[in-house]
Length: 488
Ligand code: LR7
Ligand code: MN
Image (cartoon, rainbow, N blue to C red; front, side, top):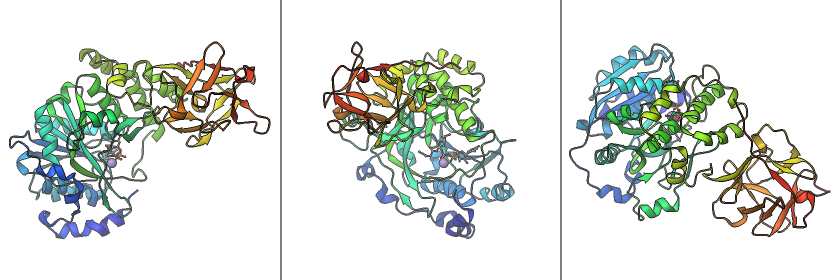
């Protein structure tokens, strides 16, 4: 968490004595952008935008830094208004002090108060409903817009109103507020646990842009906090799932929905906005963090992911016990909008996904001789896999043998790098190499293609760790790849 005193020392106290024009925000923005972006010309006639910022117990300095950077770094004729939605904060200065303060700003600032803590999703819905601009731009309450951030976003929406656009998210340190450029070489994805993750922009997307780094990157998902969307399109496509609480899941839900229902999601690389990445959450999750996030994720999995929701359920045993409420309205929305299946999304939008579009098995891998199961022991990165009694509870004993011939669990693949060497879990690289396996459904062998050796039970001296050996047809080299299903 950012300590309140730190923030005040750097910015909070100066803020009150200096006018908006002198507001002390970073000066690094000139070198942040790709040089070619500076010569881009955007149409004069752009749609205007409402900027919606929701907050719960935000620090004064970071909130005002966000507001001032919007005002100082955007052409005013493009700003319809700034809407601050207070999600029932408890801090005093966010009440009258804030209200009086924003009256004197150069752009109309509206403050909306939620009657009770509602979470960022319902708070954003309220802000959106009150907005008047042609576009809605959502920002977290601890951002800094850089010069020229807005025009490229709006220009892209003018070209195609069904394009939802994100800036490159720069990093603001929560230790010292240092500003560092974000990368245009990463885009949004997610893992089996449905965590949002950045992954390298794949070659196919580089090729599509023909090496022009000023062109937007089509991204499978967005981080969620910073994006612009045509206001009518936001309504048409189903706004947000109002059944989601507090935090989490809404970003993937919206990403899947946009792609599956005929829109597109892009990172506009000529637009940069900084975000304070916090090591800890400065607020509580009523009902418990895990419970809230699992509930939201279940809602998104049930509505949008079809049979691929199994990856989430099988890797996170326990999730299926969480009540996710009623999703019939969201399923009806998917029906009415005639949205495509999740398999279409995986195939066309996210072929490099951690969830394989085609796979032979999803579940345990059991040795015929010992009757034990492969187990990643929860350690994963560059660690050996082990063998333990099969517990049938998913988690560390779930592997998917994919059509690409990888044996993977989430982002990690079974990998062998030397003859008779250990089997380790390594980040899947999609480069084939040491991560390819041939399963022989008759002989039941798992042959490592590069080394031509077979996966065998642990040797005498290392009881827990399976080894690679020359294929010899023994029972200890026979494996059953089982499909697991979990039911709620
Ligand atoms: O109960 C709440 N009520 C709120 O109003 C909880 C939060 N909020 C506000 C909060 O004050 C903040 O302004 O909602 C905003 C987002 O909350 P953060 O800043 O705690 O979220 P985050 O930055 O950790 O998380 C990212 O994922 C979230 C999933 O629900 C949201 O989509 C956030 O907007 C999103 N942030 C970003 O995308 C910024 C870039 C981070 C990355 C990667
Ligand atoms: Mn944030």
